[in-house]
Image 1 (tube, one colour):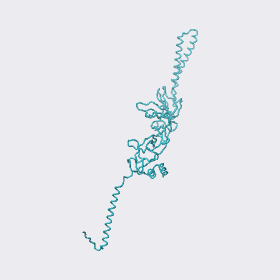
Image 2 (cartoon, one colour):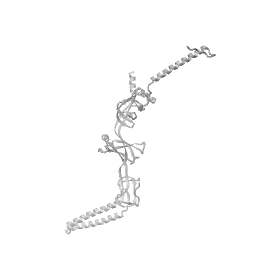
Image 3 (cartoon, helix red, strand yellow):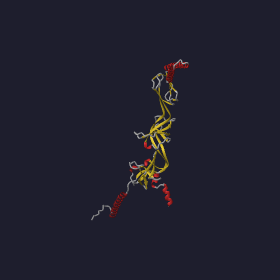
Image 4 (cartoon, helix red, strand yellow):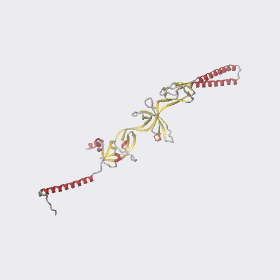
Length: 378
């Protein structure tokens, strides 16, 4: 039995009231802590924040993509076909020339003298042959002598043609039309025979050669459209066509050659590094999802769909891929909400919180077509 002692000056009734209040507060505090602990024990796992997008329908193209360097359709290394001093250079780098246009004039004195000498010898033999023909009718020249004169005449004609050809080589002409890409000669230089002096590039038509894996050989055909982007021309796209397809597969690389052609009269230039895409099929109304929705766990193609606030892993069968979209042929229906961000932390049945009010409303409700059917039933 405890004895209660009152402090001096404190009335017994007031002291009893204070003790009762303290006991009541202590009981309430104990009850509150118990309820808080019980609430913590019943609390479920935190919802994982995710971003979603709806499965939709749109046109999608099947394409093959690769890289290549642009090359001119025609290119010529101009060489001197005879030796001599360059008296005049008539073309500069960057100049557009046409086929047959003179580029360099070489010293032609020696060649001109040789041509004159052969011409004189030819005229002499022609006169001898004509006189022998007259004497043959009088049987004053044997058939053997006449044949020898005829052979000598034919040889003289060949020598004369060769001398005239050498003379023509002293004027170097452009073999093709195009642009002078480089010039390796100056007036006064001595030019050796077969030495390169110009490079001409015909950039009016450009080509890109692709080495394509043999599994694509049945898909790529001449005439198909090609889209090109060049690193040197950001933000611009150029259209071309598949010009030629080589049906022979290289046994060493397992590839075949596809040549795409482009007009070269604009900004595209030979030597540019390009990225090409060849569209070989198209679906006008394909069921598509963003590429970002696909799981990258090394297994079969799958993604997460948000249903009733939880994540469900769904296996899918994929079709064509086009840019940031990929076709889904089996596993989903239009209007499904697929996770595009935050999927790395998800597991089957994980609680999710869709970020953004609009997306949250989309994920919380069924697809719009299903809502309309439900209202019609009610």
